[in-house]
Length: 247
Length: 339
Image (cartoon, rainbow over all chains, first blue to last red):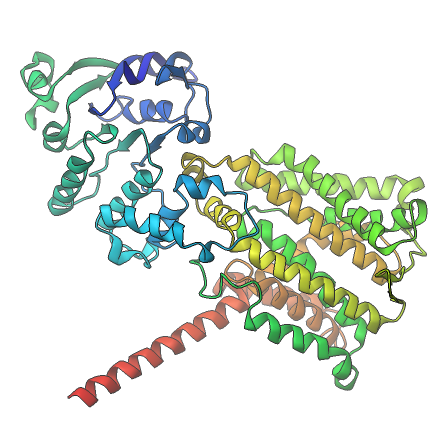
């Protein structure tokens, strides 16, 4: 059974139809890439998956449960984590604090006003483990706003990983990264592959084709092609479009 | 701001130092040409400003009608005394809970809003409370306010303290100030406080981490309103009356000014600094000219334009620069010694 499944998702903003009909099914452990031209509706679809946008019709199921009308925090609690195309970190917090507040154990004590965070070494230890996994342990005491761009991207992923997600949604994770940064990110995602279900929207075709198990192509608010990277390279639609040039 | 090194302490050296200074105030305040009552005012407004900063500085919620909760607390204190019981603890408890209830009612309407919409709604609700205070003559005394509010003794069971004297009242309010400071210091450094700070930085990110943002906004608004009500109750006790003026937009603006001038956005102590500067300016500049508010307004504008982090922020950056210079000097000395 699919872990995350979209069925007939339609989104309309006033007169404008942004998503016509999206059907997508991602089994547990798969890395599913989503590609398409600018304005195709990829980020809107991501916003539907994570509860930021409610679909006008259609369903989104997480492990069989319809979550299409739940709020972002309720969906996050069910194990869906996301990164943002425009980075959204807690800039005044250190890297460690950014990760710490994302931990489920911290969230469980979110209304606790009696104990000081500084007196609980468990949070710091858990956060440092996550930071180590993305190569940021040396930067744990640096505030997010002082980190260079590539490290901020890595911190975004660390924050998402700290949530112990079942589904990790990455919205253009290589955006703004140089070739070295992209390479490091590809290695990191490669290590995560199989342990967590990943849905990634990405413009960097070589990045997406090298990592994805399957890819869906969104155009005009619907899925116009779908398959493994090899199948898509042979797809006539992809070949005819600019998207096929880099694959 | 990242967590401070002393964030884990319940009581810090800075707190002890401040309390000792405050405890000594009645001994010397008369000798510098001031009077003990200004000390009472400073402490009450400091409680109010710390409570307000929980909303503005910690959670980043622009509440511009907070005078309403201070005023509700003041009226509740008087009405409880007239109609319920002549008991200090009951009256203060009623002030705290009534203001918290008012905050809950307003919070339910505004906790799903953010930014300018949140700010305007707080102003609108503030004006509603102010209008009620003026129009409900039979309950609030209208524009005349509630007069003849008394200062009940602080009865601790085995001993009772008469608070009719301003110095006794000063020490009573100081004791409450100590409790509020310790509780709020712990709160802002607790998981709850860190989540509020996270919400201030990005509501969107906090929601996607699984935090019900509206519930945190509602809870902190209620808490801040309740503490503002406590300060209002103390104010009514100090003034021996409660007037609608404390609920006006003008008065709500004052607490914003005090908090920002002091540096509430970057420092826990900022609101207290702002209150001291404001009330000292009122009495010292006010002794020279009636237009003291003009000069204070100019100071406010200058700070917003050039040092938006306020006085506490300025002090903080000077100390940080000095520490950096000291570190640089130590590094140079090490370099020359090893060379």
